Structures are given as structure tokens and as C-alpha cells.
Image 1: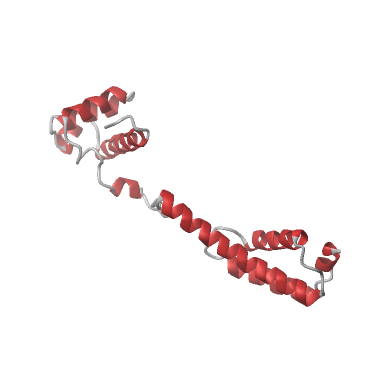
Image 2: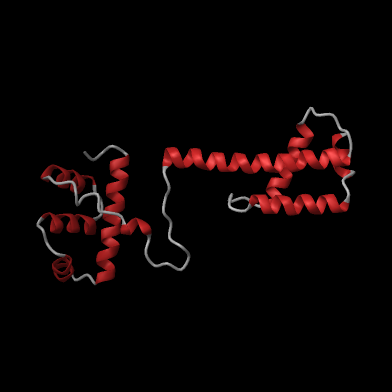
Length: 173
């Protein structure tokens, strides 16, 4: 009976619902068709009595609006607990993570450097750690190891990501 009510929707009502779902899905990361299909699923599960095409159409519009609200609420909850990860736009060369402060720069102490060195499996990163512990400048490091600027930045990025990962895992103090 509920499926028959969906089939009874006019062509214009279907077009309006599809357009409404498309508009409501903007900014949510989902597509309008996903919203529309979820609204149909809600209609099929609903205990609300079938009264006619217009009431079915109104129910579907309300369901689409509710789905959009739920998507934004979910995004807010995730952002509150996990934060927002900056991502590079397409075509950008630099990752926003590279622009973040180096977590090791503010963490002084030989113990930290030793822990990082011991937990690292990458020889290049170990070389960088030791050179930076000796207060070598980027130019000195590049000259000593024969790295160009691109190579230096790549190793620096590997080191930064390693520090972040190890810190999140609780392996670094």
C-alpha cells in the first residue's frame, strides 16, 4: 500500500521532490538522490496512514529536510569530538599539515629527541633528527646530506607526521 502511494505520485511531484532533495543536499557531502532514496525508505517504514498523493509528497519533503538536519548535526558532533582536518585544495602543492607548527620545535629535551630517534625506522628521518638536535640550519643539513630543498621538505614532512602519529599513540612524552 505504501509503495503504491509512492507510485501514485505525479510526474511533477517527483520532479519537485528530486529538485528539493538536490537543493537540500548541497553542503552536506551527499547527493540529492541519496536524500530522496532515504526519504522513500522512511516513508515505507512509517506508521503514518496513507491519505493521498499530496500528503505523501509533504511527508517526503519533511523527511528530506530532516535528513539534511541530521547530516549537519552529525557533522557538528564529529567536528566537536575530532576537530577539523585542514585539507589541501586540488592543485595546491602544499599540504596544510606542513604549515602547522613542528611539534618537536616546542618540545625541548634530549629525552624527547632520543625517544623519537629510537622509535623511528627511517634512516633519513634519523639523520634529520640528529642534525636538528645539533642545531643545524636547513641549509647546513641540505649541504651535509646532499639533499635539495624538495628532499629536505619531504624528510621534514615524514618526521612531522611520525611525531604526530607517535604522540597520538602515546609513545612519545
